[in-house]
Length: 233
Image (cartoon, rainbow, N blue to C red):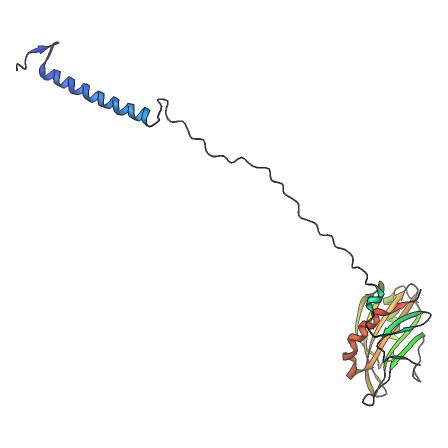
């Protein structure tokens, strides 16, 4: 073949190069078309992907529940009385004690400035030296407060009586002071649990006395008995 012969002003080698370039261009266009239409791309470029936004949901938030604090409910008087106990009642007061406690007279030589409302005793057995006693007295309030009144009374006590505990308590709605005392009577060591109770202008004393060897065993009973004390209206 005459390679120097010209067609459309170009030689055969030149036409071959031109054909190769045309083929390469067609291949590029085919690949580009596939990428554009086959892959979902557009000439304007890929659209930005919107992030997944979680829309806030209105949630009902309840405030903390306020738990009201109620005043203690008063226990009916009848429920304060232990089963089998005996009532001791006068025109002024009422109190309950175990059945072995009997109404009695004050022992000889025992004198009180206050008025005696009630004396109850449990007679000592052969192995005991001292009767167990429950005593109730009363007198007018002669000071500005129960504390001041009691301070005067303690100062006037016999030196052989020692107050070892004093605290404020409330007995069935009445202000009271709880005392524990130690004493020696006729060469016998005794302990006393006393409650000094203010009822308006009157001061009541309720005293539980026992020999020291029996006192702590009887203490739970004393604390039950004082809950049954009440002024008769």
